[in-house]
Amino acid sequence: MNKAELIEAVSDHTDISKANTEEVLNAVMEVIKKAVTKEDNVQLVGFGTFSSGKRAARMGRNPKTGEAIKIAAAKTVKFTAGKAFKDAVNKRK
Image (cartoon, rainbow, N blue to C red; front, side, top):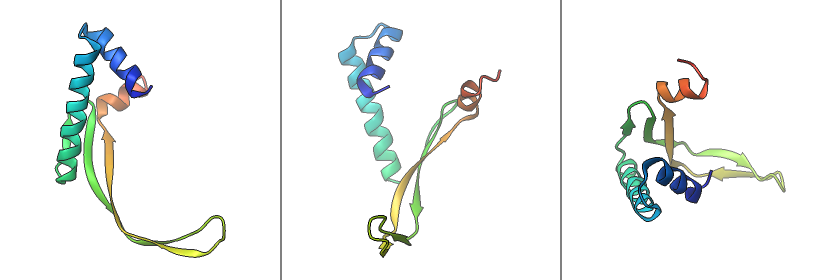
């Protein structure tokens, strides 16, 4: 499912126009992005938690040449699914 399909599904489920649904979805994504950028966690009970993490610098290999290369440290985004979400995916009650 891509963003357009998600907007259509939410719009159909809530009887809100696609334009308004897209505006709300964009606002939610922007708020989550800003919070995680500030290293705050965004916890949606029953769904999951968005958080930031750090990836240490490491050595890697260029797959084309086999040459060793240094991969710089980086910040990363994590999503941890909540129990209710996991249970729904695994069809547990």
